[in-house]
Length: 263
Ligand code: SF4
Ligand code: SF4
Ligand code: SF4
Image: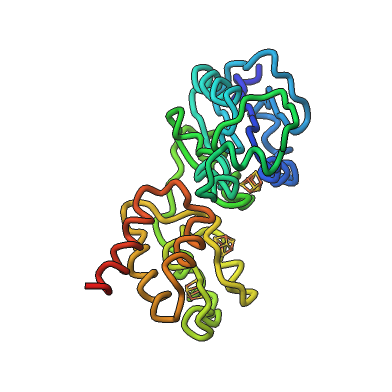
């Protein structure tokens, strides 16, 4: 007799489906088959008639319509563990990187066109429901998925990464594009886990894995460094907001640096 399989659902909100694609490209999924049953996977088949009860629900995308608010609430009700997957679900994604009001954005994209959904400003899933675990990145690394699923399957709980991209960058021996070239690298405030992929190619980090938690994302210190390198407050906030638009401390901490300088 086989043991009861763990039921997994993979849902998508407003997104590019890139996180699901990352998941789909993992050969290791085949190894899950003896232990897990994927009961819902929007990328393969979207049956919106019913959200089934699952043990683990992965949710990709930002909540950007009224219908998605209802969907995440229903998924929460019917799932034991809810995992927000990727920058869109955990931080709101690049689609929430704007100060413009919804009606102005709407007009720019759709004009007078009619659509079947009720739009909202894009927000992270956690703005509407309790999220139990987060997979960061745009998309998350394959090993992030494997680590989380594997840990859940053995009845344990995955740990969060609480150190910045700079640590992995230094370990790789990369040239520091911030110090050496004055580029606005967000490595110092961004959660590690990508093995400093962008600086390894001499590209400054744009922070896709989101700001480190535990109140140690020093937006202010980094803003001070950027300012010394000639960046304006607006340029700094715009860059830091690409993947951190909903971080409650970002603007206040950057503003503090510029206020201090004025006095
Ligand atoms: S986090 Fe990135 S890869 Fe995943 S759905 Fe959003 S935009 Fe696509
Ligand atoms: S290049 Fe960026 S991530 Fe690497 S050490 Fe410098 S600031 Fe940190
Ligand atoms: S270096 Fe930064 S932008 Fe590049 S993958 Fe890592 S967290 Fe994302």
